[in-house]
Every structure is written in structure tokens, then in C-alpha cells.
Image 1 (cartoon, rainbow, N blue to C red):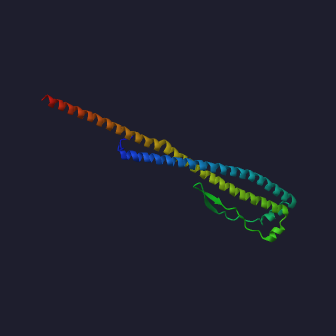
Image 2: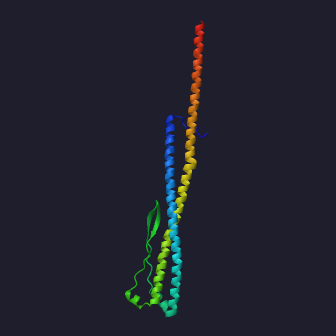
Image 3: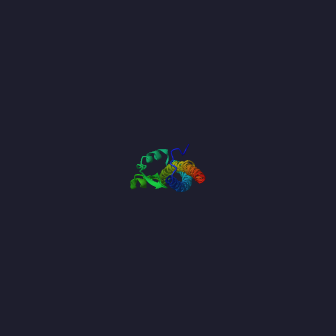
Length: 214
């Protein structure tokens, strides 16, 4: 029986009822948190989707610019100029808090500066190609940041859902069963006490009648 280890006292009844109140408050907070996390998840999803569309457009323009530069300058010159391209700096990753979830914050993806003299010698078509692909690199970092945040938010949403479900479907019903058990035991004790009182009254009445006869 579920209530075998429960002491059917009024103090235990009060404690259990307080626990039910706290559990319901906690459940409401978890549901609010889950709703906020879902809203943030869909907002980030829309941003990531927009960035992916932007990425496809940037890649298309980037390859068009490379083909145009190759047609104007020739493949040999293009390969020689590629040696002057700016190197990518190491990406630094910080963290930020999104609805209580720690997610990565990636920097903008900087490049080492190219000497001014080298920039002046670059043909316009090649300079445009460099700018296109630098933009692609930054968008890729932005997408990676948001998709990582989406995975972490989804994990937190599932975790919050499990905790809320455990409170709603396990903890609160168990506490309510404890309250019912204690009240049932109280009713049993009341019936026993009432039955005992009737027995005592009956015996007293019998004794009084016996003494009256004597």
C-alpha cells in the first residue's frame, strides 16, 4: 500500500498540502519557462532560415565574381593573386545566456589586414570576389552560432518538458494520494472512536440499569 510509511497525523496532512501548493507553483513556472524557450527557439529558427537563404545568394554571387575575374584576368594571374589573400584570424568563442541556457557567441570572423599597396594593385573584379567570400565566411559563422544555440535550446525544452511532466503526472498525484490516505485514516479513527463511545455508553447504561434493579 502506498501509505504504509505515511504517518496519518494532522501535521503530516498540512505538510503534504503545502508540498502540493509548492509543486503546482513550480509546475506553472516550468510551463512558463518552456513557453518562453519555445518562443525563443522559433525566433532563432526564423533568423537561421533567413541566413541560409542569404548564404545561398552570397555563394551564387561569389562564384559569379570568381568566374568574371578569371575571364578578365586569366587563371594564372588569379592563382598568383590568391597568394595575397588575407588570412583568417582564429575564431574566438564566448558564451551568452539565452533564457537560462548558455550558448556560444562567435566573433565576426576577422581577417588579417592586407597591405594598402597590395590592395591598390588588385584588379577590381578580384577585389569584389574577395569581399564576396569574406561576407560568406561571416554568414557561415553566424549560422553556426545560431544552429548551435537551437540545439541547446531544444535540449533544454525537452528537459523542462520532462521535469514538468514528472511533477504533473507523478509528484502531484502521489501527494494527492497521500492526502486521501491520511483523510481516510482520520475517518477510520473517527468511526472507531464513535463506535467505542457508543459501546462505553451502552455499558454504562447497562450498569446503571443493573444498579437500579438492585
